[in-house]
Image (tube, rainbow, N blue to C red; front, side, top):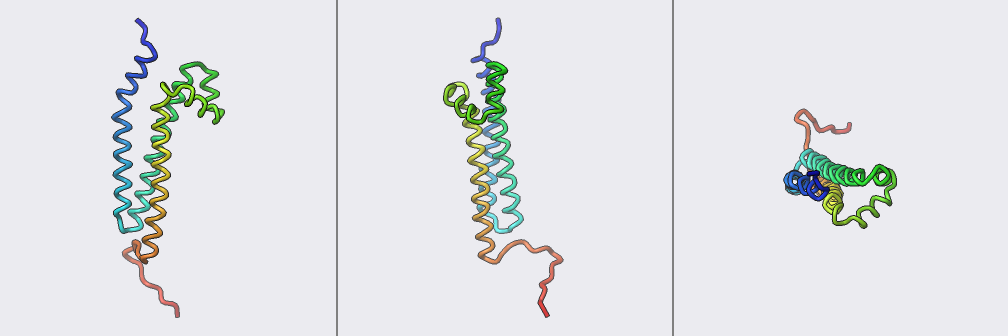
Length: 144
């Protein structure tokens, strides 16, 4: 008996949900880390990790949705990959099937935006306080 598309999608959701939950948990951890850090280096690492976590989510969501589009046919898949407005149309017209990957994609975009925006605020807060990490061998230079 051949496997139906709904059965295939259900099995993909079964193993993808824990992966997405783990990546989101990592993103929440990173957001908490850089909101409660004082050093500039820690903030920069948190921004980097939060952005890469969001990028990973967007790539997973886009890859998943591309896979669904190519499953319908090569024409649909190529339109999805090469024509950005068709991505939106595909998501709207096939919301029942393409909804979960588009949600993963949008969560990734939101995480990247939050990491960058909150990181900028943390850097501004550190700069206003005159703080930041100094190298161990740095010496204050006093002009002559």
